Length: 282
Image (cartoon, rainbow, N blue to C red):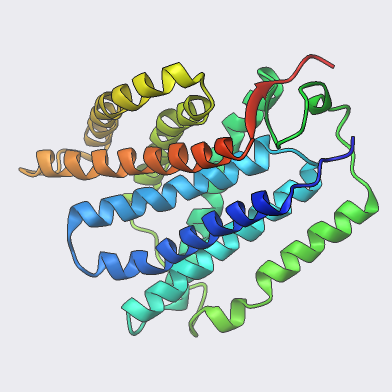
Protein backbone atom coordinates (compact mmCIF):
# COMPACT_ATOMS: atom_id res chain seq x y z
CA UNK A 1 0.00 0.00 0.00
CA UNK A 2 1.58 3.34 -0.95
CA UNK A 3 1.92 5.81 1.87
CA UNK A 4 0.77 9.37 1.13
CA UNK A 5 3.63 11.81 1.10
CA UNK A 6 3.33 14.48 3.78
CA UNK A 7 3.29 18.00 2.42
CA UNK A 8 5.76 20.69 3.39
CA UNK A 9 3.53 22.56 5.91
CA UNK A 10 2.83 19.33 7.80
CA UNK A 11 6.53 18.48 7.89
CA UNK A 12 7.26 22.01 9.13
CA UNK A 13 4.70 21.70 11.95
CA UNK A 14 6.06 18.28 12.93
CA UNK A 15 9.62 19.62 12.90
CA UNK A 16 8.68 22.59 15.08
CA UNK A 17 6.94 20.28 17.60
CA UNK A 18 9.95 17.94 17.75
CA UNK A 19 12.41 20.83 18.15
CA UNK A 20 10.27 22.40 20.90
CA UNK A 21 10.27 19.11 22.80
CA UNK A 22 14.04 18.74 22.41
CA UNK A 23 14.53 22.22 23.87
CA UNK A 24 12.32 21.27 26.82
CA UNK A 25 14.34 18.06 27.27
CA UNK A 26 17.56 20.06 27.34
CA UNK A 27 16.35 22.54 29.97
CA UNK A 28 14.64 19.88 32.13
CA UNK A 29 17.84 19.02 34.08
CA UNK A 30 18.43 22.74 34.62
CA UNK A 31 14.91 22.99 36.05
CA UNK A 32 15.59 20.07 38.38
CA UNK A 33 18.49 21.99 39.86
CA UNK A 34 16.03 24.59 41.21
CA UNK A 35 14.74 21.95 43.69
CA UNK A 36 11.21 23.26 43.19
CA UNK A 37 9.17 20.06 43.36
CA UNK A 38 6.19 21.30 41.36
CA UNK A 39 8.42 22.54 38.51
CA UNK A 40 10.33 19.25 38.54
CA UNK A 41 7.05 17.30 38.39
CA UNK A 42 5.75 19.33 35.44
CA UNK A 43 9.04 18.99 33.52
CA UNK A 44 9.17 15.24 34.15
CA UNK A 45 5.53 14.90 33.09
CA UNK A 46 6.28 16.61 29.79
CA UNK A 47 9.16 14.18 29.19
CA UNK A 48 6.91 11.19 29.93
CA UNK A 49 4.29 12.65 27.60
CA UNK A 50 6.88 12.71 24.82
CA UNK A 51 7.51 9.00 25.36
CA UNK A 52 3.79 8.39 24.87
CA UNK A 53 3.83 10.39 21.65
CA UNK A 54 6.82 8.43 20.33
CA UNK A 55 5.06 5.16 21.17
CA UNK A 56 1.88 6.43 19.48
CA UNK A 57 3.82 7.15 16.31
CA UNK A 58 5.50 3.72 16.38
CA UNK A 59 2.26 1.79 16.88
CA UNK A 60 -0.49 3.77 15.17
CA UNK A 61 1.04 6.04 12.53
CA UNK A 62 0.75 5.37 8.78
CA UNK A 63 3.45 3.63 6.82
CA UNK A 64 5.35 0.39 7.13
CA UNK A 65 6.30 -0.70 10.67
CA UNK A 66 9.84 -1.43 9.47
CA UNK A 67 10.20 2.33 8.93
CA UNK A 68 8.11 3.56 11.86
CA UNK A 69 10.04 1.63 14.51
CA UNK A 70 13.50 2.99 13.53
CA UNK A 71 11.96 6.47 13.35
CA UNK A 72 10.64 5.97 16.87
CA UNK A 73 14.08 4.85 18.00
CA UNK A 74 15.64 7.91 16.38
CA UNK A 75 13.22 10.21 18.23
CA UNK A 76 13.88 8.36 21.50
CA UNK A 77 17.64 8.66 21.07
CA UNK A 78 17.37 12.38 20.25
CA UNK A 79 15.34 12.83 23.43
CA UNK A 80 17.99 10.94 25.38
CA UNK A 81 20.80 13.05 23.90
CA UNK A 82 18.99 16.31 24.74
CA UNK A 83 18.46 15.28 28.38
CA UNK A 84 22.07 14.06 28.70
CA UNK A 85 23.41 17.34 27.30
CA UNK A 86 21.21 19.23 29.73
CA UNK A 87 22.53 17.10 32.59
CA UNK A 88 26.13 17.76 31.55
CA UNK A 89 25.44 21.49 31.64
CA UNK A 90 23.49 21.38 34.93
CA UNK A 91 25.74 18.82 36.65
CA UNK A 92 29.43 19.43 36.21
CA UNK A 93 30.47 15.80 36.75
CA UNK A 94 27.59 13.92 35.16
CA UNK A 95 28.63 10.26 34.93
CA UNK A 96 28.42 7.97 31.93
CA UNK A 97 26.77 5.21 33.97
CA UNK A 98 23.95 7.63 34.86
CA UNK A 99 23.52 8.55 31.18
CA UNK A 100 23.39 4.88 30.16
CA UNK A 101 20.90 4.09 32.91
CA UNK A 102 18.72 6.99 31.76
CA UNK A 103 18.80 5.59 28.21
CA UNK A 104 17.75 2.14 29.45
CA UNK A 105 14.80 3.65 31.34
CA UNK A 106 13.68 5.65 28.29
CA UNK A 107 13.94 2.59 26.03
CA UNK A 108 12.00 0.42 28.50
CA UNK A 109 9.26 3.03 28.81
CA UNK A 110 8.93 3.47 25.04
CA UNK A 111 8.63 -0.31 24.58
CA UNK A 112 6.17 -0.74 27.48
CA UNK A 113 3.98 2.10 26.25
CA UNK A 114 3.78 0.60 22.77
CA UNK A 115 2.35 -2.73 23.93
CA UNK A 116 -1.24 -1.61 24.63
CA UNK A 117 -1.17 0.62 21.54
CA UNK A 118 -0.23 -2.32 19.32
CA UNK A 119 -3.07 -4.27 20.97
CA UNK A 120 -5.44 -1.38 20.17
CA UNK A 121 -4.14 -1.36 16.59
CA UNK A 122 -4.82 -5.08 16.23
CA UNK A 123 -7.98 -5.49 18.33
CA UNK A 124 -9.79 -2.18 17.71
CA UNK A 125 -8.13 -1.40 14.34
CA UNK A 126 -6.99 2.02 15.53
CA UNK A 127 -5.09 3.93 12.87
CA UNK A 128 -3.59 7.41 12.99
CA UNK A 129 -3.87 8.42 9.36
CA UNK A 130 -2.23 11.34 7.64
CA UNK A 131 -4.07 14.07 5.72
CA UNK A 132 -5.53 12.87 2.46
CA UNK A 133 -5.69 9.19 3.48
CA UNK A 134 -9.05 7.43 3.36
CA UNK A 135 -10.27 4.78 5.78
CA UNK A 136 -10.08 2.15 3.04
CA UNK A 137 -6.41 2.94 2.47
CA UNK A 138 -5.71 2.35 6.17
CA UNK A 139 -6.51 -1.35 5.86
CA UNK A 140 -3.31 -3.35 5.96
CA UNK A 141 -2.52 -6.76 4.60
CA UNK A 142 -0.07 -9.20 6.16
CA UNK A 143 3.01 -7.59 7.66
CA UNK A 144 5.80 -7.46 5.13
CA UNK A 145 8.72 -5.23 4.29
CA UNK A 146 11.18 -4.96 1.47
CA UNK A 147 14.95 -4.76 1.42
CA UNK A 148 14.91 -0.98 1.04
CA UNK A 149 12.83 -0.74 4.23
CA UNK A 150 15.61 -2.60 6.05
CA UNK A 151 18.30 -0.35 4.59
CA UNK A 152 16.41 2.81 5.53
CA UNK A 153 15.80 1.47 9.04
CA UNK A 154 19.51 0.67 9.44
CA UNK A 155 20.32 4.19 8.24
CA UNK A 156 18.04 5.72 10.90
CA UNK A 157 19.65 3.59 13.60
CA UNK A 158 23.14 4.57 12.42
CA UNK A 159 22.21 8.26 12.39
CA UNK A 160 20.83 7.93 15.92
CA UNK A 161 23.92 6.24 17.36
CA UNK A 162 26.64 8.09 15.40
CA UNK A 163 27.00 11.12 17.76
CA UNK A 164 26.81 9.01 20.96
CA UNK A 165 30.51 9.27 21.78
CA UNK A 166 30.44 13.08 21.45
CA UNK A 167 27.25 13.53 23.49
CA UNK A 168 27.83 11.06 26.32
CA UNK A 169 30.25 11.91 29.14
CA UNK A 170 33.40 9.82 29.70
CA UNK A 171 33.38 7.04 32.25
CA UNK A 172 32.46 3.42 32.91
CA UNK A 173 29.09 2.51 31.46
CA UNK A 174 28.59 -0.65 33.52
CA UNK A 175 29.18 0.45 37.09
CA UNK A 176 25.71 1.82 37.90
CA UNK A 177 23.64 0.43 40.77
CA UNK A 178 19.87 0.20 40.85
CA UNK A 179 18.00 1.64 43.81
CA UNK A 180 15.92 -1.07 45.50
CA UNK A 181 12.77 1.06 45.13
CA UNK A 182 13.15 1.62 41.39
CA UNK A 183 11.99 -1.86 40.24
CA UNK A 184 8.70 -1.14 42.03
CA UNK A 185 8.38 2.56 41.32
CA UNK A 186 9.13 2.43 37.58
CA UNK A 187 6.54 -0.23 36.61
CA UNK A 188 3.91 1.52 38.76
CA UNK A 189 4.57 4.85 37.04
CA UNK A 190 4.53 3.21 33.58
CA UNK A 191 1.24 1.44 34.31
CA UNK A 192 -0.40 4.60 35.64
CA UNK A 193 1.03 6.47 32.67
CA UNK A 194 -0.75 4.06 30.30
CA UNK A 195 -4.09 4.28 32.10
CA UNK A 196 -3.95 8.06 32.27
CA UNK A 197 -2.63 9.05 28.86
CA UNK A 198 -3.86 6.42 26.41
CA UNK A 199 -7.43 7.79 26.73
CA UNK A 200 -5.90 11.18 25.87
CA UNK A 201 -5.12 9.79 22.43
CA UNK A 202 -8.79 8.99 21.91
CA UNK A 203 -9.88 12.28 23.51
CA UNK A 204 -7.73 14.41 21.21
CA UNK A 205 -9.58 12.98 18.19
CA UNK A 206 -13.06 12.83 19.72
CA UNK A 207 -15.94 14.80 18.23
CA UNK A 208 -15.48 18.51 18.69
CA UNK A 209 -18.51 18.90 20.93
CA UNK A 210 -16.99 16.41 23.39
CA UNK A 211 -13.58 18.04 23.71
CA UNK A 212 -14.78 20.73 26.13
CA UNK A 213 -16.21 18.11 28.50
CA UNK A 214 -13.00 16.09 28.25
CA UNK A 215 -10.86 19.11 29.13
CA UNK A 216 -13.05 19.88 32.14
CA UNK A 217 -13.28 16.30 33.40
CA UNK A 218 -9.71 15.20 32.86
CA UNK A 219 -8.18 16.93 35.96
CA UNK A 220 -10.69 15.06 38.14
CA UNK A 221 -9.86 11.78 36.39
CA UNK A 222 -6.14 12.41 37.00
CA UNK A 223 -6.85 13.23 40.66
CA UNK A 224 -8.67 9.92 41.24
CA UNK A 225 -6.08 7.85 39.39
CA UNK A 226 -3.20 9.58 41.18
CA UNK A 227 -4.78 8.65 44.50
CA UNK A 228 -5.00 5.01 43.43
CA UNK A 229 -1.39 5.08 42.18
CA UNK A 230 -0.11 6.54 45.44
CA UNK A 231 -2.13 4.07 47.52
CA UNK A 232 -0.61 1.13 45.62
CA UNK A 233 2.91 2.50 46.06
CA UNK A 234 2.35 3.02 49.80
CA UNK A 235 1.00 -0.52 50.12
CA UNK A 236 4.13 -1.92 48.44
CA UNK A 237 6.87 0.39 49.68
CA UNK A 238 5.37 1.54 52.97
CA UNK A 239 4.21 4.99 54.10
CA UNK A 240 6.44 7.91 53.06
CA UNK A 241 6.12 9.65 56.43
CA UNK A 242 4.27 12.86 57.15
CA UNK A 243 4.52 14.22 53.59
CA UNK A 244 1.84 12.17 51.85
CA UNK A 245 -0.08 15.28 50.80
CA UNK A 246 2.99 16.85 49.18
CA UNK A 247 3.87 13.61 47.41
CA UNK A 248 0.30 13.33 46.12
CA UNK A 249 0.51 16.89 44.75
CA UNK A 250 3.81 16.10 42.95
CA UNK A 251 2.42 12.91 41.39
CA UNK A 252 -0.77 14.72 40.39
CA UNK A 253 1.15 17.48 38.61
CA UNK A 254 3.31 14.86 36.89
CA UNK A 255 0.28 12.95 35.62
CA UNK A 256 -1.64 16.06 34.61
CA UNK A 257 1.30 17.58 32.72
CA UNK A 258 1.87 14.41 30.71
CA UNK A 259 -1.82 14.38 29.79
CA UNK A 260 -1.63 18.00 28.65
CA UNK A 261 1.49 17.18 26.61
CA UNK A 262 -0.11 14.25 24.77
CA UNK A 263 -3.49 15.93 24.36
CA UNK A 264 -2.04 19.25 23.19
CA UNK A 265 0.42 17.75 20.71
CA UNK A 266 -2.23 15.51 19.16
CA UNK A 267 -4.62 18.45 18.88
CA UNK A 268 -1.93 20.21 16.83
CA UNK A 269 -1.66 17.21 14.51
CA UNK A 270 -5.43 16.99 14.33
CA UNK A 271 -5.52 20.63 13.25
CA UNK A 272 -3.26 19.89 10.26
CA UNK A 273 -5.41 16.97 9.14
CA UNK A 274 -4.41 13.82 11.02
CA UNK A 275 -7.26 11.53 12.12
CA UNK A 276 -7.64 8.61 14.51
CA UNK A 277 -9.99 6.09 12.92
CA UNK A 278 -11.13 2.49 13.20
CA UNK A 279 -10.03 0.92 9.98
CA UNK A 280 -12.55 -1.34 8.21
CA UNK A 281 -11.89 -5.04 8.43
CA UNK A 282 -9.68 -6.26 5.59
